[in-house]
Length: 370
Image: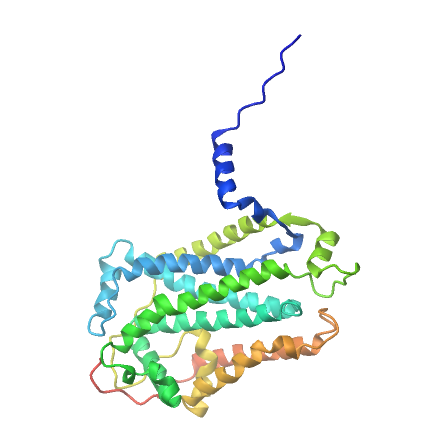
């Protein structure tokens, strides 16, 4: 009687994976999601998160050489560019990837708005996303100040002017908060600790809510089976794929965006403006803040306080404004038209701000930099 063949011994890689999975439960990440999730438009949020992780890594490297003392900050930037190993490249990668991450997050917000993915039961996740966008813009702003060139100096003056307008509530944004620590150093701490902590906290909530409610179906797709969620209905209609496949898709696009930022870092580098001249306002803000620049011309620095104070809450309330019967484009046409008008207006204001003459918005600060 022939002997039964013994089963083949698992490979080393298989045994290692089983050991890791038994401890971490990574197989649980292979839960099903709708097939349309691997459309790049539904991957923009993941690409943004990937970029933020790379930004944290490059930022950690840059902090090893940056000195937040106002008398030495500019010299430390020069050291990063001229002396630190790969310093100029890492600084360029950090700058360009920050710009691209803002682009991907804005595109993600536009996609969510256009497809109605903020509708019930995902209203709170939209609010969390608005918070993440606000914090990311705060990181861009503080990063601009940390350059400690003319642009960074003028950005700091706007920061302080808004703090003065807020009265006691805005004292943290002014040098009057404390004499023990320069405001530049406090903004540095906000850039590397406070804002990233808040951003990753909201990102965790965002991811948990996505896991809770699932990836939204395409706009206007009806729920034909009572008791089904739109996510389950989408999977039955179009098929599903494991979330691990979606992660691979995100990593691939994230690496591509990082490669584009690397190429820009090598070919263009990160800008560093003139040495600070506190007498005259000479610069304009980065492109994401340019739509506010004309309002600053027309209504003074107060516009930088009031427009975001109104615009951000209105943006957060979009799920309450949308009372249409369906997420279909046709059903939501008035809201989509209003969103398109706002988008075009912001682009037009940004272009106008880019080409209009530089104006004096904040009085020159002649006192010693402290």
